[in-house]
Image (cartoon, rainbow, N blue to C red; front, side, top):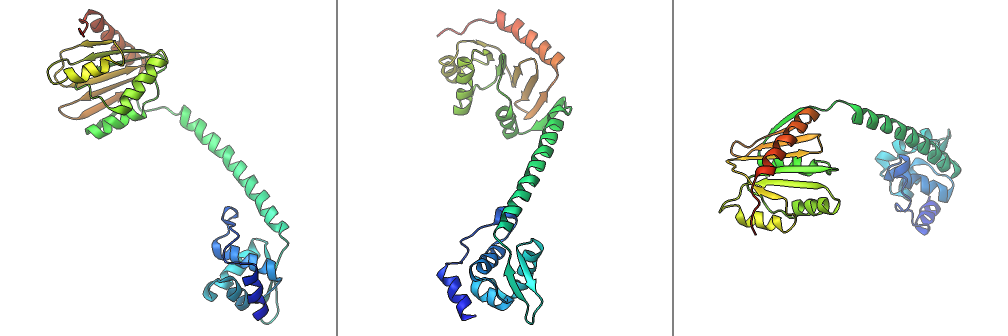
Length: 251
């Protein structure tokens, strides 16, 4: 036993091999590595040399036996001997096969997720949820038309708008333009020029790519997301009809 402990110290067996990816915990890794270095040992000897608590060592060794990494000799007391390190390679190949199969299942789940019907109408409350809906919206591919109430000038929104301008997205905005919002609107005009005024007492709206309409009722903090092509196309027509007649904002 003394030689076993000395050998374990020589090879610094205090958790230097981590086999978590193969389903082994720290105690199992330590016990298996100890046996690899010293050849064999009783449960008490492996516990002392590996640092695995004696109260856990039998469960740990039995687990290693079941995993095919250790074999037990039915002596008194029982002696445990490690299988060849090639057993680890067998575990790796088994885990790779399992992960590949799991990957196939994930692909099936992704396909099911992408083709499942989405809720046409989603209603939420509070401003934070409205901002979350904006953040989670996909990038516009063709156009994005908006009606703004406060024209808040947030860095993440300016980045998205700048990106849209660079990508050639058709961006148009109808904004409340009064003493309260004038400064914000003028900041936005430095990023893109397609902003015209609208009388607005508390509504924000965006229409995106004939796919999505987001409506925010500012004063009641109720927000509605509608994914319906017919509705989006109609709101697009109504927006453009008003936009074309609206005055331009003078610098």
